[in-house]
Length: 296
Image (cartoon, rainbow, N blue to C red):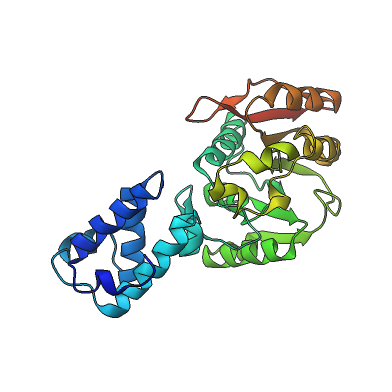
């Protein structure tokens, strides 16, 4: 779709169907959903609005916007990047070129951390949380939205990513409970923390070229590349986190497929106890590994 003219004059519903057909032919995995989201964004209509206005014609200006969105999606740019935001844990998060698109799998980390905190009856306590490699701030902000007495620090090596995280904290009304620091992993942090979470880069370097185009071509490589075996970040973060945790406090990692045993071993080497098995995501992949620091 190189120009918007072919859609101008079609009804909203006909334009949506035409876009979905083109996405399907272009090998897009979720053509119907993507067409609805992009048409809705171009026309500033939600799902209900699209239904209400299904029979009205698309204007030439609207058709041009739709065509621009379509061209980007057919190049496998993720819908979230085209729209500039993504929902995570019920929160609307802004994105940038320096941040990953938050994925449903990562909500497993939030759920696992909350499970550990609630098991300790600590959800109402003034917990101090660190999110190492915070990116858009997704994990930290999701946790703070559930823990009203908690405060949190997010670190990232990318100042552009931290600017996005600060914006998200501001938009969600969490600025007074967050701070963000530019550093490598936990290098600039001072403990103790009651909870440390991290979704570090964990894709083996040689596997990045084979990732889906949506990820390979649009997610920042810095947030993907975990070194030769995908474990470089865990080797760096685990001992740092173990020294920063308060006694009986918890470290929760997101891990890639097949990495839970290796990351569990790194936690044990750092003196952490794994009292809970890895938590699986909706696809059955062990996604969250949890370690607890021993009591003094």
